[in-house]
Image 1 (spheres, rainbow, N blue to C red):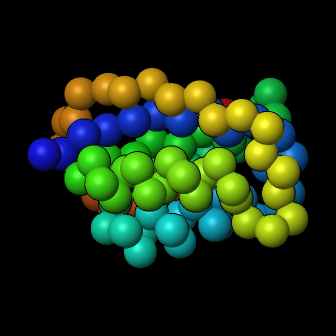
Image 2 (tube, one colour):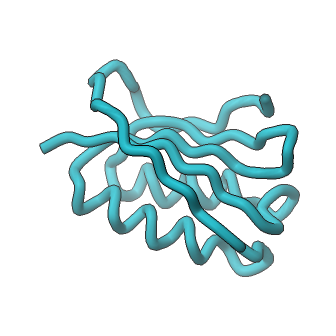
Image 3 (cartoon, helix red, strand yellow):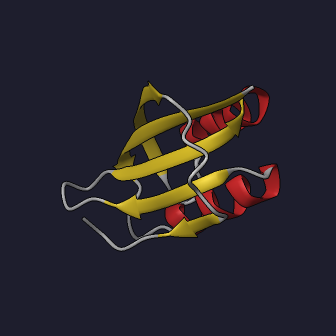
Length: 93
């Protein structure tokens, strides 16, 4: 069953290749969506796919790449829309 979440990752997550890390991990899992920096210092992730793969990404978001220091990952589950293609890095908002 396809599901979707939006995550907000807080900590030292900008300027440490966090978006690249998320994009690589999500693509490897076959997930669709995007990742972007937010002006408030958080990273936002929208991901859609099989629940098992989403759970793996959620776990990895909590760890991040080596130079990152994740303090918190908050999740919002949403209805899957099927309107996403690939996984990309978007501009900061």
